Length: 320
Image (cartoon, rainbow, N blue to C red; front, side, top):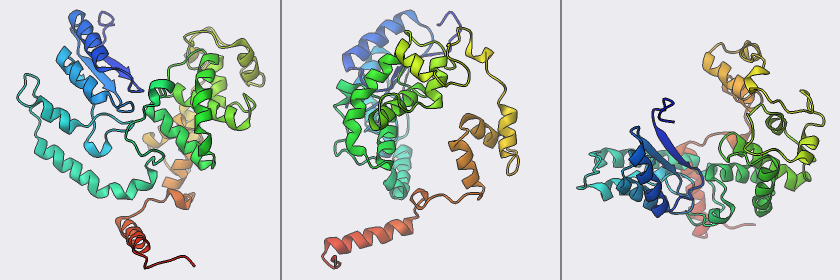
C-alpha cells in the first residue's frame, strides 16, 4: 500500500477486539517496514481500548483515535484525558494543554442533558463483554437497539445477535463497517421479526447484485436466488465494476429538492439518502413536522423533568 501511494495506514478495530499485546505486536511489525504514519482506531466496547492504545504507543504508533470524556467509553473511543496524563513526562508526551481539554469536556457536560433521551440505557456497564463473543461493532449495536426499540421488540436483541453471523456468512462475509454493517444488521432484524428473507431491502438486493463490489467469498446460491428473484436489475449478479452500470444520480437528486433548496450540501444528502435524507430535508425546511419524540429538548425542559422526578422521589407526588 505504501508503494501504491498510501499516505498512512489505519488499523481499524471497529468492535474493540484488539488486545494490548496484539496491538503492540502488530504496530511494531508495521513500523519496522513502513515509513508512512501508522494509526490505531479502536473502540472501548470490550474495555480493552485504553490498554491497547498505550501498548500501541509503546510500539511506536503515530496516531490513536480518542474522544473527550463525555463522548468516550461504551462503544465510543477511549477517553483522551487519562491517556494524556499517562504520557506526561515520557518521550511520547503530546504537549497538549489539559486545561483546555478539561474546559471542552465541561462544556459538553453542560449541554449533554438535552440529548439524554438518545442515550442507550439498555446496559448499566460501560463495557459490553458480550462483544468478545458476538464481535458486533458498537455503532452497529446502537442501530440495532434503535430499530428494535422503535418496534417495541427490544427483548429480541439476543435473537438478532444470533442471526447476524448467519446472515453475514450467507452474504459472503461482508466487513461489518458502514454501509455493509447496516445492510447485514437490517436484514438480520427482518429475518428475526418477519421470517428469514421474507422481507428483503433494496440495499441487500443491490449488494447481492454487486453494486457494493465483490464480496470476499461468494454469496450463498439459495439466498442469492431469493434476494434477486424480483430485483429490477435482473437475477444475475454483475462481474464488472459497479460504477459501470450506475446511472448519474445527481440531477435526479437536484430535481427532488428543487422546490425548496439548491444548496449542494442538501442535494448530496438527498442523493446519498433518498428516503431518510429527503425526509430530513423536508423537516429542515418546514415542509413536514417531525414527530414529538424527535423534538430536541431545551435545558428548561430538562430542568422541569428533573424537578418532577425529584418530587416523585420525595413522595410529594403520588399516583392516583
